[in-house]
Image (cartoon, rainbow, N blue to C red; front, side):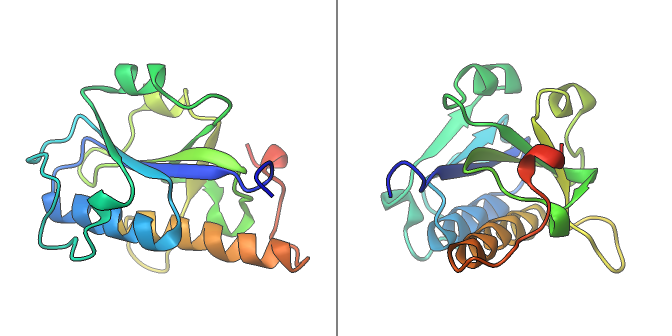
Length: 167
């Protein structure tokens, strides 16, 4: 149903690596994202790279923003921002909003406090050992979790806490 399908986008704040960008783009295509984006990217802004052998750029767009302010002004209507950063609600308990934009912080700087304050949700991926994932891997985990929980919900299986109770 077009009214319940929703959509999502995913991107990196101050990403520093073209391979991470390409890997995230390819993974976003494979896992159903509607778009990706960069904010203040610190790498060359190319349309294709060695990690994007599927030519994801031909299937889903990548929007490029100079800074968070311009990104925030351009956010889709009625589409909450979900920060993926240490210190948030565990991904295991998080119910993904029907429409949203996921924000990943760079590996060296993360997501600044002023940006976290603008996010409707703050999610953390639990780990066994080190606290931080590679940014493209973190994005892949978030997108796969969304896909898996969405499939379970279609089958009527509970997926955890509701999005309204996890903020």
